[in-house]
Image (cartoon, rainbow, N blue to C red; front, side):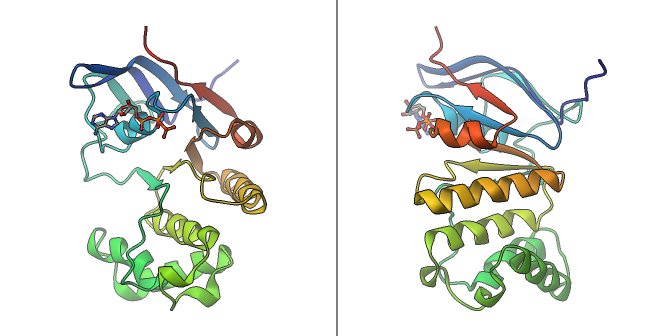
Length: 215
Ligand SMILES: Nc1ncnc2c1ncn2[C@@H]1O[C@H](COP(=O)(O)OP(=O)(O)OP(=O)(O)O)[C@@H](O)[C@H]1O
């Protein structure tokens, strides 16, 4: 069978914090347009692994390939991997619209009008069209999360990552997030989810990677 080229590949990735070995020789492959969940017990290093993929942590050993080419996640010139953090990290003093257009204007140098148009389209598709002028404190947890998703999506990442996307949500909102991730998958997005919620991970994922304590 002709297997597709993985969009992301980690080869023997090893991470220590000082003397503490967090994970050793992690090998994983993410196929395009699929959802990979990283699961494992609390403290095993799931968030740290995600942060290495995002270039927010260095690694001690190992390689990353993006679409078959070696890449350095810490090279911030590329915006290939987007993230929705567990606490969303919206800017409290900016409106929903301004939260979303800040990076495309400042980082990608997109003209403001184009950024606004793209943001409005995203807000519409996420059911938040009437929220563009409000501030984060005026939103529910689920709405904040969708704004954070819009803020990541506007940068058109090749891969979108989520750290514990269901931890702050009630059961109804949790399954709405599952539906949203499935919709994104159908729209050809590749996604990586860190979760301690195995039920959620099993529902949404094509592949589950169990991170274990290094021996
Ligand atoms: N910046 C840091 N400096 C030192 N140690 C750290 C740092 N960040 C995380 N750790 C340690 O690395 C280990 C893994 O933490 P991490 O947050 O990645 O685990 P996790 O599997 O995501 O946990 P949880 O499910 O509870 O969120 C923990 O022992 C933690 O204390």
